[in-house]
Image (tube, rainbow, N blue to C red; front, side, top):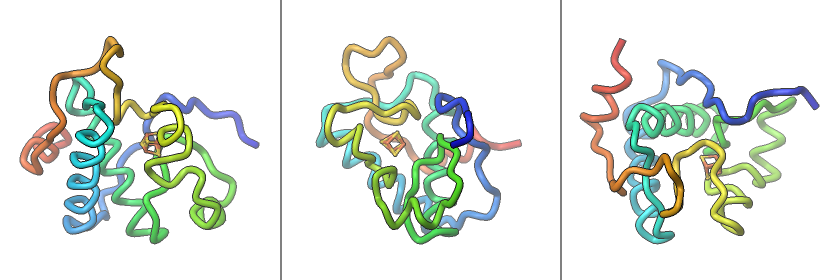
Length: 125
Ligand code: SF4
């Protein structure tokens, strides 16, 4: 297993489709509201993770966590442990990507929504 820094989201791909990003964006908003979690105070963190999830959904057919290294991404999608929301998030509200932050997290903002315009604005250039 390769040694990676799981706290760092991977760079988003430029090839994700707007449709998949919108699906992921809506999922994240609903899931944050349902779990009582919040997006990061820095919206660029949220935007980069959402783009990474959308890219994986396009490339792999599943929203594999974008903040980890995998030897075989397709096999990981099949196993589903790291498909968002991953097992650590579902069981313990642990999101190492900082997409879903619990109320007591120092980096949480007060938003459970993010618009497509905001995603595009903070990830432009
Ligand atoms: S909930 Fe899990 S899979 Fe989804 S972004 Fe967070 S760490 Fe990654």
